[in-house]
Image (tube, rainbow, N blue to C red):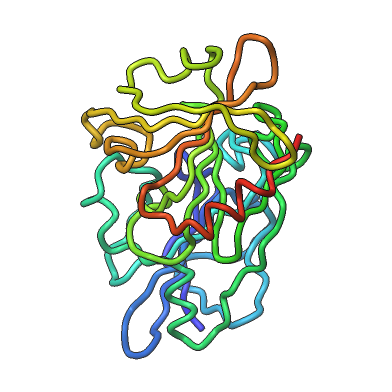
Length: 259
């Protein structure tokens, strides 16, 4: 149950509906973005109930989605302060937003996700990598177009998906060790991973200002990377791994890699 707090067009989202709820004595807001507003009759102040139709998704790359692909943006926020901001650059700006995975689990709803394969023919960003690999249970994947990367992240936990990053796969316009330009490269060795894919495994480290960088903060510390051939003769795929990732979870992803 809830009431419509906002219904309108927002830059970055396109059509947006925000509902306000009372759950466990606390006020919580749910935001639904990239909607086709002409498909709904809801207006501010209307009551809604569980299972009620809200709106259709906006058309792909239209004003309804503000140029984005066709998909639903869903988020939760604690309290009554209305916030219509999208992506932010600082962690402090994320305060007040709730992790839906953890929120629903706390309400007794089973939010476990089964493992699945990343499909380069249908998953966003797949055309830059042409790799298939397992996304472990409890993980998600996002495409970061600004740095041509796939971020594999834990669904549960605080902060942004970038802050919960476990593995980052980058499409780099360079070959072999040149793909690690700007990093201090330590011990390296030639290895085969997954379905017999040739790669070079290296220990690397780098320092940068993470507050303005699009990569996860752990990339500023020492970590392991695998460099393998990319989609053409001028590119490489770089698989960078959070140094805190358990070896068993890393092995599950690396052993599943195929082209």
